[in-house]
Length: 430
Image (cartoon, rainbow, N blue to C red; front, side):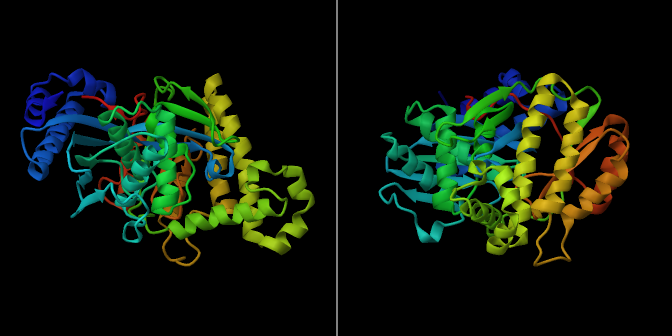
């Protein structure tokens, strides 16, 4: 352990370039940017919390959803990959039983009094609620944590479908785990992140995002047993074929205020499940659903029925995508990606909000991607919760320049991000 000034000097002089290379890639331009970024985080920590303190540095990646759109919360399958966009955090323990977190881009410091463990109404849907929920989760597992001060800087696009919230949760969770020697597994920390988001933040998410950020690589998860999900990690190295680039377009429409839209998907799916005396669709026989479709329509309405169809199809498709990746059949995987994108439009109906039909950023981005990539061997789909945020596209390198220029002519400079997959999950790195 070292002081913030010592770590800053080491990073500036290249002592930790091998670590940065593993996380972000070896190019000198990337290393230069990350040295500056990490040193800036250390300097900002000193500005807010004082110099001379012993610190640890943490990282937590964002993720790209590869398959399983709105399937995890129904105890289905999920497929996602950690990416090179991440959150960097600097943390140091204090002695007053308060957690204080300053995040780049926000004009306040979250202050959490650990003597008040219950959800606070004023914190709901804010980052402070995630910190408090995680702290309470650790306590519920018999782990004693205390106060710490932290500064975070994230380049995971906020409200975009790359799961900036899961990266924040995993950074906070691993800080608690490391600083107070709690020795929870990454999967246990991920589960506490989901708990904080569901109960304290108020968003009924599944656990795939937290798992992917915690573990890194490409994650296939079976959530039939949510207390003990079956998780398999596919190593990210070499997964994308030579000449294929994963692009994510930020359509500049945030989904951070659309919790009610996400909640409606889960509520409607579970309403259909209730017609069969089940809690989630993962417990319902697809053949029983089709046999009882007239009854389900009468009870739940047509959109809920279509969203149930989406679950059954997307769940099977996610399993097929996993098998295609393991078999090295990337063309088959891309065909399934295109099918998934179509299902989001026709069945899940989470590409835009029905209440604001004039705003359809994702629809435009998908239409433009189809116009450029159809017939090239590429693929495109919406990712994440939907309604706003980002789309992803697998772009053949020969089309890449044309694709990026076209996307940025519509959504603005810097809106098209070229991502790499990341093997390393969240944790303390220095």
